[in-house]
Length: 135
Image 1 (cartoon, rainbow, N blue to C red):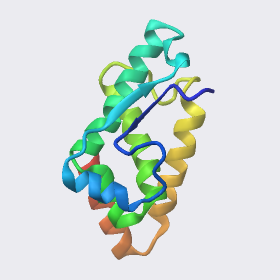
Image 2 (image 1 turned 90 degrees about the vertical axis):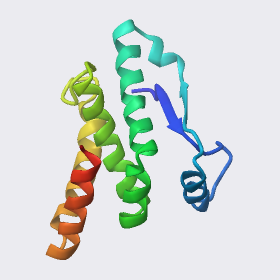
Image 3 (image 1 turned 30 degrees about the vertical axis):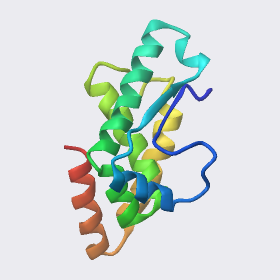
């Protein structure tokens, strides 16, 4: 599977995670960049746009930054992917279980699930954040 699009507020040449905090707090706007593979069909393009809007929603509402701050970069990225797949499906895109999506979605979902095996205080905080992210 090819990368079809990215949503990011950071400049592509940036290597520092401090920039994420600065950009979030300063109100930087995310941008979407679509690759050629996103245009393979109208259906694929529609799903890709919806998926990327899921990332934009997560970023602008502060979900990504909150997860990043509370649980680190890896968790924030994985839960953001799960959220974007679910956002796309709710708004008319392909199901996360669609053959085209299943491998990428399952990988991210499994990574998020690892956090569910923590001690109860961490798990409670994670669940509160996860619930807030998925509203």
